[in-house]
Length: 424
Ligand code: ATP
Ligand code: MG
Image 1 (cartoon, protein in one colour):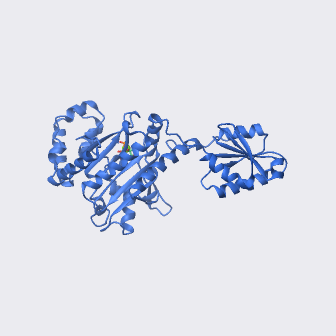
Image 2 (tube, rainbow, N blue to C red; image 1 turned 180 degrees about the vertical axis):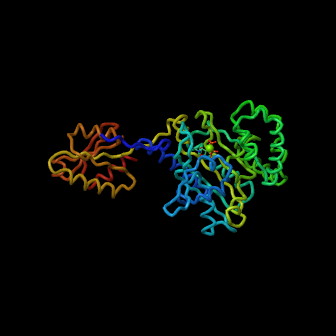
Image 3 (cartoon, helix red, strand yellow; image 1 turned 30 degrees about the vertical axis):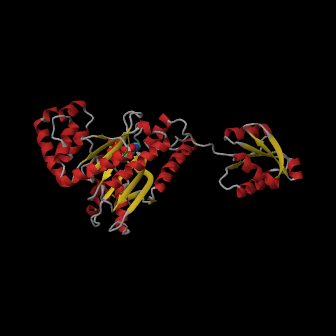
């Protein structure tokens, strides 16, 4: 027998039981985005490789070792998007959405990174990203954080996530700091591991978020990024903190918080949880005022973040089991007897016309009453409609409340009104 073909490692199927909770969570996220006036943008999953190299930076983990890159039939190098910001900025420039304008955008969809699959880390994963263009004050940075805080409240996970915040200053201030940090690291080369030694010259700020505890201790004596900030960035950060204080949003300033991608400046933030094990960052972002220009557009301030949906779903399931997917079906239509199926299907259409939004599942494949009622239970229906031969002759239908067990016979013409009262 032929061997079964399996999915690619780290690329998940999301089965019907799971998609129901995904839909409910995504619905909550989208409603909140709408309540702040943000609009969806849909972007291709594949872009030219050079876009990611230019935007994310050649010496980042993502570009160095995580991208799915291949040549198309015309030998153009393409890459499955590892993140959404680069494509969003590319589209914004291409369609003239950015210069001298304000945009508040969001997108959701799969991203691809060649990483070691484990809980909360996959090769195809999903992000919801939010990007705001054309606004430079700290008030918009604060709004993004307030929006995320509202998400946590609506999902019932607010007490399980914590906000970490930092400012990494202007590109120039960071360059000065970088030199100071490298000078410090050079004096302690013998204490660095292989990873940090490699990053020391390519991407020295990444040494700051090493997981190696000994190196973290060593870093206590390293120069502090906060001491190198330019005045404007310092003021911007103080402004952001004041907005968050006024909004009652708690945060920790983490001087070692940097981001893995090159394009950030000033504000960086992460929402982290201790309830998911090692992959604790649910949502991460910051300001990237230089990126639009770097990709060929006119200088435009920008700020945004991306949230990992797998981690969010895991967290909701772990800490808020009450946030369940709704049942799939409200009404189950039972039909038994000769020539009842077609009449029942017509009644189903009539109910769907009269009660938009109500979910009615028709029994297919026959079966006696007992079997059909068991199916109604399985799908979580609240009401069963029952059509037998005698109901069809009389123009009636039996309405059974599956919670109380009460049932009554009503005319088919009045069934929609009965259902409306019953379902509330
Ligand atoms: P990490 O340090 O966990 O690798 P990152 O800095 O690479 O994260 P970002 O590029 O900032 O992550 O992506 C934003 C969010 O997307 C992360 O906080 C996380 O929730 C999610 N994410 C990133 N990579 C993966 C992955 N391979 N699988 C699942 N979720 C991911
Ligand atoms: Mg990563």
